[in-house]
Image 1 (cartoon, rainbow, N blue to C red):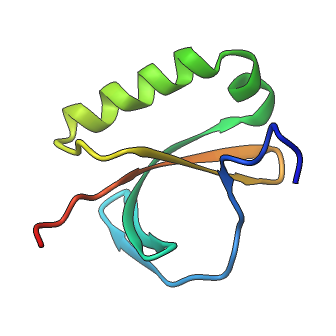
Image 2 (image 1 turned 180 degrees about the horizontal axis):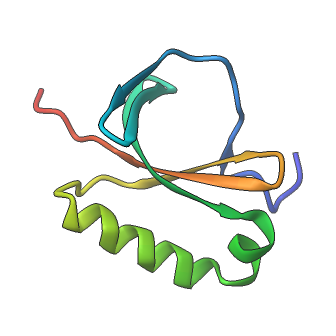
Length: 86
């Protein structure tokens, strides 16, 4: 795996639960919610801008978890982890 893509999550078949427009899915035993997708070229060119934009979007929606990224084809899907009480 190249160093550019080491933080991206590998795509794999997984069940999806649709909640409104967004998906809540499990990735690597973490519950996450889809925030949106961007082109890989835009993601690599302006990572800080994309990260700040989607981090603010997650905070507006009431999620304080970490952002996760999944590269699939020419798009990067951005997720936020859902922190569940233990």
